Length: 483
Image 1: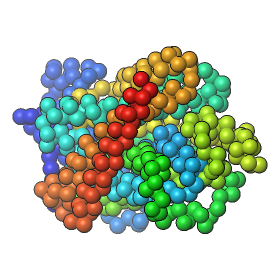
Image 2: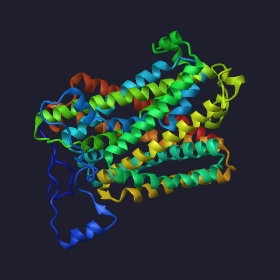
Image 3: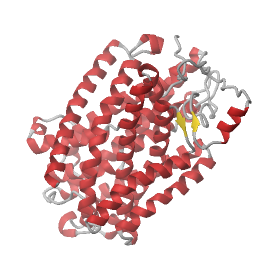
Image 4: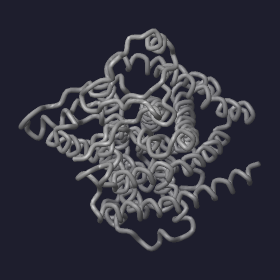
């Protein structure tokens, strides 16, 4: 197996991979560096948690291995069921019934493929996607790519701020502007979690995902969907090519495949303590990281299906106007729209799930921000500082929008349209190097993608790039029309 050295400063000695840790020179400069809030990051990805979780050695059984490697997939799955997906999926069901189930299925399969390659890159090379990209592009281009990726992370954070503020308003009647301001205090949650250890963070995120899933399973069971129509919806239909249907399908695809997840996954799989000089351990890690990823993404797939099914079963024929969180919340309690199963409990559970989704995004968004900062520009700051800076920057446009438009939710929904522009741009920036690196035998050795997977991956990259550019043009058009 060929190995690729981890990132290091140009002209500096590389840092060894595997279980070895960078040695400290102990001089005054190093001591000053350690005491500073801003540090140079030339070592391993998320070094404070890298290789901290033990895994079975030798001939451990399948379930022991799966338990040891499970966790990173849950943090990745969060991005595939964040508040940005909810409106698109529920509105798709409300407007077109079960027609777009096949789009969710295809999007989820694409996500599984990309996340498999992301995890494999991190395990085999000991580098996350940001570090690998910087190593092969240099500092100047790396800085530009960092800016683009940071904007995408902040765009995702804006969706979380909006979702959290609206959930607080729906649950407790807190005004939007106050709710937006309160979201900055989730840094306290992050501080608490960082002291609990990475394994407990994975468990908490998995628990919140379970809450979201149970809420929507309960609501869908009450809605009594048409099972044959659901199964039929998984078969692609040419009706999807209609103007409105195609636009909604593009929205579902664009909201499902998130660029920041590719950076996140390639880093957090390295929390497992394996020896990269042992080919058996590397193969085992790739195998069970793939199992973990696919199981958790299957859960995200189920949640997204439940969202669309809920929209189709309860709101099909009443889909107009159900394009905001508040409208959906009210509709779940309105018997004229949702039918006899409508109740205040359904509305409350919807808001609880929305709040849980936002808190999950808090954790993964902060970790991703740290990963891309360390990888692209090799600068490290404490996670709490990272969270405060990202959140302060993210809430500024939300606060301005809330103040200018008197706390109207429709204004925040327009802001969500603006934020998606950066996600459209960032996706090809992350996909192209990922496919390039994982298809290279020079970088990946025997773990390089097969010819079939490489061909399929490049086809996906081209199609998704075209779709995202189409969404970008559409979003810019909407922005211009709103000015």
